[in-house]
Amino acid sequence: MPKLSCKCGTVIDLSPIPCPNEWSLIASKDMEEVFDALDESASRAEALLENAAVGVVVCDVCGRYYISKGKDSNAYVVLVPEDQNEP
Image (tube, rainbow, N blue to C red; front, side, top):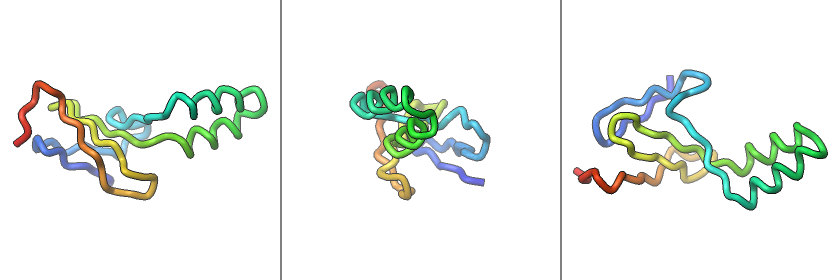
């Protein structure tokens, strides 16, 4: 079962499908390509979307965003809400 330990102490369970804590981030230019591909084929649009999307995990306790550094990476860039103090 995949899990992510947040810096606030919360353990985020990533095993449910779909996972309520997992999001996808995609650049506007890439999204335009996906929309254009939808006219051609849904499978091509899906492939473009999967290749362009960056995984994001959100802690529903403290609001931190864990943005994946890559498709095959377990490393994240962590964004902390401005009203939170970093420990």
